[in-house]
Image 1 (cartoon, one colour):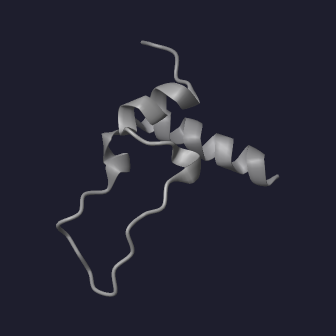
Image 2: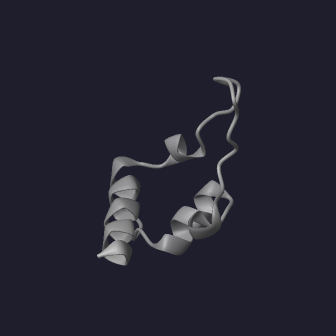
Length: 56
């Protein structure tokens, strides 16, 4: 398995996670897929740990 890095996650998603601004709608819109579903559990854990470290 390849090493998980912030850069590899951003490349997989196609955007910089730190500057990502989700589209917000006044109504529920199931037509827009959550881009983070592309990530593995390990990649999601990596991002969670990174976010927690930044706010600590």
